[in-house]
Image (cartoon, rainbow, N blue to C red; front, side, top):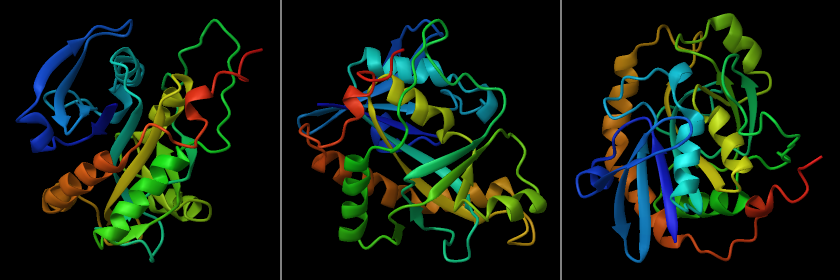
Length: 253
């Protein structure tokens, strides 16, 4: 089985022992690190590029998902940093979103510019992968929210207090990268689920926001994230009950 990991930060154990490989796609070359976890092939990717310098609105989302499909990846685990919109969701928590709301503006959301393809997003995140993530978090005693609505904003600026006040009425966390990843993965019939690491309370819910705060939380949680990923990868099976891998069957007009 082949498993993809997308992260906004380098997870050392998947890179230091990994083999760099460049995948050519119609959307440009994409760099992956290939490593093994038992009998499973794991392909790690930094969504912000090798140097980590691409802002969210310039990420090559179509290239990333196409590269995973070309590498025969069966499922994708996406790590994302988010801000909390709810007092009950605290920095350091993990949220496993089951739905999203899209407030991005200028991204490429589909591979099908010349065909009428309408993928079903009644369950946008793979329920089988979400169940496995939740199971592993529980077993490892990690504070985890088994579901939540992810609100995607364009970035690269952070949100205003007024925006957060509005968003908090219908979403739980806010971030900039899970959309359009989740949509494109569904179009390529790849199971996709996200582990959202809460790094701060969103604007207006704490006095100010800084990038240093995000780095501090990610650095502190990296060992935990590494262990979570390894245990999730170990537990993923091919015979999942989801319909993600057949999503195009009823999507064509």
